Length: 270
Image (cartoon, rainbow, N blue to C red; front, side, top):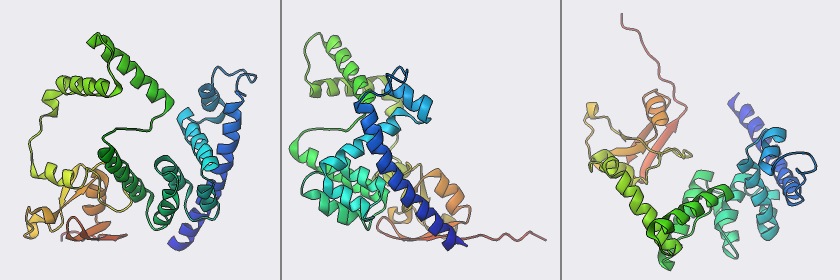
């Protein structure tokens, strides 16, 4: 009974969402009070891994959302009213502020997590381009790596470099080291993946696109026109499309029809 299983899964997700909120609150108190020290653990990360069996980053994400929920009560209310999921709340908290939060909550109610994340990332990129500035969210551990890279760039230049100059120096160094590997022919497949922003176009999929699939197969007269090509990850291309579990028709990139839950039957040759 797929509907019964679906209802059970949704119920479990709802219970987990409540657990995530409570867990985030308690974990925030635990970290703020440095409670791992009297318990004999070397660090908060050590406690997370040894006692909870969770990566420090996973726990830190829940703590970060809990702090955001304190800062944005509207988001907590939407979460408790089940207008949005825990994951959608986390995405909105990372990218939205002030008056725009309510608007994003309304949009999130009709979007998948993947679509919401991409929309908010596109919004951030547009705002950064308009401001002429660059900003990025990162964990504390990643921030430490970036700081170390900036120090190395300044040492190599033997002078003070701004953050922007450090990024330019790092990018130039990366290109120089990997120049040969970065040389790629401007193939049709590459152009299609670029058009589709290098993501698999199956609804709800967040994997990177690695194949450009012919919507109408060439064996059936399909052309190499971009409208007949769609970007897919390996799993959806090989196991979904060619495995007979799904079908795509229409015209790319914005007039596509997806069919799921198909079962291909094979007839043995006599």
